[in-house]
Amino acid sequence: MSQPDAIGPTPRTLAVRGVLALNWPNLITTVRTAAAIVLGFVALVQADWVLLLIAYGTYWVGDIADGRVARWLDQETRLGAVFDILCDRACSTICIGALLVIRPEFAPALCIYFIQFMVVDALLTMSFLHWPWLSSPNYFYRVDPLIYRFNWSQPAKAANTSLLLALLLVSWWLHWPHWIAVVVAVAQLLVKFWSAARLLVLTTAEGTEPAGPLCDQRPHGRKAG
Image (cartoon, rainbow, N blue to C red):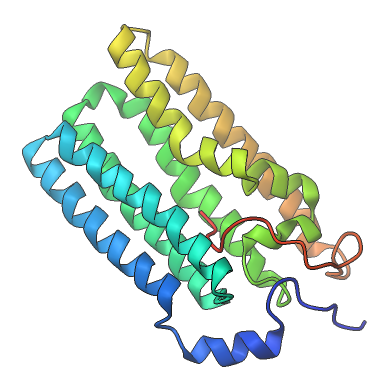
């Protein structure tokens, strides 16, 4: 089987760039992760809503920025994608911990989300490494458009990182029952389990050719989470 052309940077280009781990996108990822974790820890210790929201904002804005810069400067690397994935989980973990200290009644929904994002989604997001011609999950639409649509399209990313938090805050503000957030968290988890099952079929099937003709269309951003 001939190896398909690379989606995004070529394998040779990726190999060269892999040595240059400290590029602008990775620098942004490092700074935003350090800042979000420090702010998150202080928010946890002081049970401070304002600091927690700033920590989340730093995490989310930085997560968008490193992906856009990677695309604009053509500095996408597989190492950078993995680094971004790990940093997303680090930021989310400390922010969830702070949120639980401030609002322990959110525990059921956040526990389900934690399992979904830290375990199942992490496995799914790292799965692009199975295909050496993919530089990040942003190009997974060439392997399976349906998995991509439910996990790494722009609406899916936004829903995965912010929908549950927004719903928890709204439910607290409007005094809605917390089981609504739990239902949403369970629904997200089921989507991830379905995606993982479909991915298992893909990785055990013969061949790893991309679905559909290759082209240079690039979804926005480098990030995977």
